[in-house]
Image 1 (cartoon, rainbow, N blue to C red):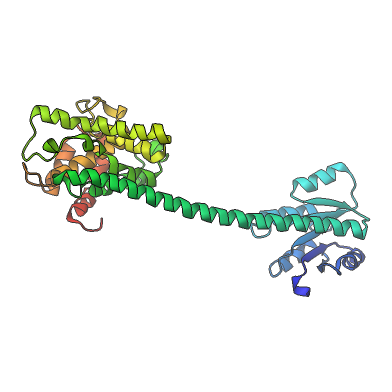
Image 2 (image 1 turned 90 degrees about the horizontal axis):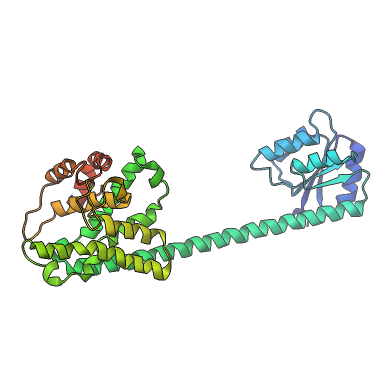
Length: 359
């Protein structure tokens, strides 16, 4: 049927050449004989051909100028172009091919040769289009499977975090809230550009869920200490402090067995470093300043803030204003001064999390 045949534009300023070309092609293709490149561009506004056969030497706009204009248009640049020309020198052919033509056919040409070249190039274009569709489908499948894997990963992380939290009667909701605080801080850093070079390399979708494992080391702490009513003794506190190093070790072992992944790296750095302090007085390694991983410095603010506003058997929950003041008082001692400034800019959103409302 006429509508199923491929459309070929034949552009030549010589009417005789147009009629001759159309006679050669009309049995197999729907041919549009066109006298100039300007007319071709007018027609392209309504008709998209499968192939353009373009004469090189034409007045007003020659073939080289026409193909440059085609390639500049995103909607037209993928239409295959074959140059038809009487020029037989190598430089002219190289120029045409370098401008994006797929072939160069010299005049006078035989019908069988021209038909075969058009057939081959259209077949190649068709297979290229099919391959793009297949690749698009594969990308959709990969995207879907990746989403499923991320959901599974986050479910496992959440389950592991809950196992720890369920053992610690005093910290209900702590994991979920600290994740929200962390996300607020990171979003603010992206807005303000703080630590841009490092933050821009992060996969935020991996970072935020990884924070769920910040206290995974508590799984190795005795229930007698973890759920002790009242303050811990010095000895008990030393045992409690080991949860940071233990948590880092647990995640490092996962990396050894399953290879390091973005989220495990973030999780390891957070678990091992969120109790370090800017002035070097923290634990487990006594790291100081920017030697403390940035993820851990962020988590330190989120973790302490939530501890301050949460009730414990040995203390009342502080107000969000009181907690804000303590975080700001820790600027340059406990916490990274730059990150405290970031926190101050979003402290109202932290308070909204505490109240259980949208932030």
